[in-house]
Image (cartoon, rainbow, N blue to C red; front, top):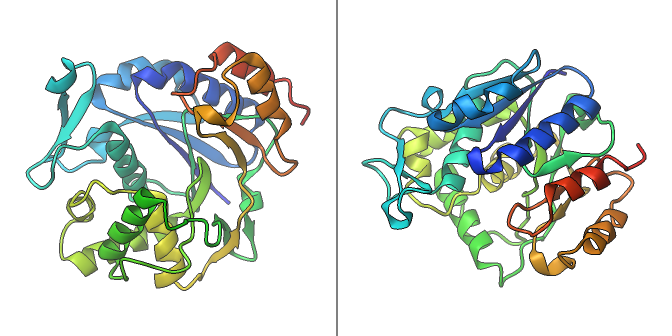
Length: 291
């Protein structure tokens, strides 16, 4: 099976993204090509990562002309804001999700494998292992969203609006991880479905709210519109994530403890960029894992 690996990134994560690319080149097996999806002003900075299996794509090749980035006046232009006639200002994490969704319409592959910039592969893995009998493994934690997870319920509600489904669902499943696959044919069908339901361009419909979770939209589409067709569900995350500062001490010992919790079936680790661990320490520990 042909895999399009996609990573939406930006200049502040360039060093982390470079480490992620190095780990993919060492350990990702099979038929794959990696696409780095960035803002126009970051294209030049990311070019050195290109090669026979990696391409940098500017979001101008993915976005409609009416959605563009500008300096954010609220922080003296250090960050960016995405403006359009059809939404309130969007932030970088919104733009990154739109890039990943849009790529489905531009590539020739069987699967989109989404890998975040702060992920590092630690064991060999062939994405074709996510397929069996024509079905693709889809990450889902059954009932993983509790009542007090307010933001997740907002994501579920917006996904429901886009897909013509109820705003609330029970049990509420969690589809979010930093190393997950989407079927390309299903992703394209999902964007067509959004346009049919809303009567608008899918990007315009998507940004009608800032409560965007592309993983949640895809998960609800696969489960509730496709009724699971073409997918097999798994609650086994391929990436061991450190989501929060409080989870482990922000020391080398804390990072070592995090690494000891890596499960046998996990092939990557992820340390959120806002968690205070040095990239050099992450690299050393990640590359010391026995395959």
